[in-house]
Image (cartoon, rainbow, N blue to C red):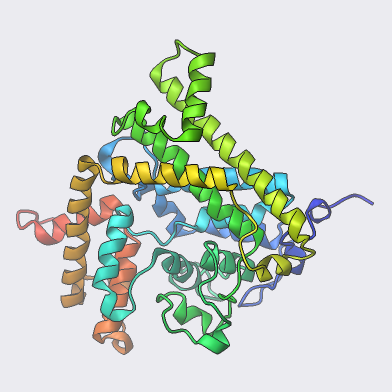
Length: 399
């Protein structure tokens, strides 16, 4: 008998053949697994296409070679697939989650999210992870038979809690109080078991995100001259890798040196994660994916030493890159754009495009604000700038 893909996976991997299925029943595909189908729907979604013009750190016009949300998501997916292959986990589910994890981000990165959350505080707030769930279950309009993308339970679970449980007890005991909007309005009808950990594949996707942005923001920051190589060399693991590169290639160009540093750092982080996760799995001895979910902690993790180094690198990037005065200037401008757009659309919702006009049943302040938040969250950086110019620059007459 010929071995199938499922046969080579670990017993605690997520198997599409025993998926908990979709909220809206559909016939199975003849040539794709349930998770492959989820991945394909995400790639073909409008939200995914918009990621190519959404900020990772720099706004879109700061250069053609810096990361966008789309390139970042592709890099996360590549890392996640490699890790899952080593751990005999389901690569397709991890890839789907990696490609979808940033769908809920506003224009201008975390700066836009912070302003939108502040504006939405009286109406349930705004959270980009919750917005990603809202987008794939409600806001995408592509199919006649159902709203959203109708993804499998496992993909929705991974989107909701890839960073860990959101409730400390089952929803039936705790209720929905304190959950960000996007989670609370969905799980009341489709329980994603927010009190437990997600699958190992979702945990891999979450740490692949950490690996990708730690390595690639380091790359972007060094190439942009926001900090010097000597500063990052003070971080143990990074300094060790720099010494290796200097010793092996003493005369190499700076740009190649940066690439060697980043690629070796990513390799080191992936290798450590696989090693530490293997150790934890051997200790836990899970027999099913539900054993992963029921465990009291994450099973996918870095070793303590590398976790400390990753935290140090994040701290350096936050201080020297994300808070650099050049980035702060663009952040300040971006915040004003988002706030101005929100306040205008809420006070004058008739300025919204026809397809975003607020239905009469939702025309109270909270309903209008949520429609506006959904509209702004879906904007690309350049579209938000253009909308702001059209609405606030009195010298412009273009509609």
